[in-house]
Amino acid sequence: MSWAAVSPAILPLAGVVVGACGMLLGQHQALRVDARREAAKRALDERAERKDAIIGFLGATERVEQHRGQLALEPGHGAGDLIELMHAVWLAKKIIELVCSGTLAQAAQDYTLELNRASQDLRPGGAGRPSPALSAREQQLRAEFMEAARRELGYAGEPLQRRTRTEVDVPDVGNSAALQS
Image (cartoon, rainbow, N blue to C red):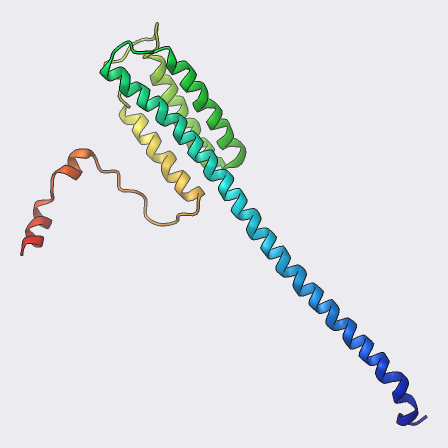
């Protein structure tokens, strides 16, 4: 058998094999791109779900803090409403537990427990507190929750500087002199 006799049968067959390999390679690449795109979309959806849960929790705790601030201005003002507001906080905390990491869920749990304990003292029949303002412990647990939430959402930089209002209001003498020079 000579090449001239075999080539009309072999060349089309080789073309079919090369074409099939090219098609399979192209499909494989397309599937990989689709899988990456789907994984990225899933990651964005999960982040958005975690972000919504965090915002819901912060909104619920903010309403409790705001109500307690109102109690500071008007003692006895709807102290019974704290029960309903704390129910919303507990529900928001449970949503955090469902969609977020264990670290963030624990930070939410710690903050919720302390917020609930301190708020119970303000309810009718509670032990009573000198001030409905957030305690130092509540502020610390809120800050820990915020840092855990920031890490949960992908922030890997420095933690927030938790300055007090007096630290912000009082300029640093050393820095102000350098600015005036």
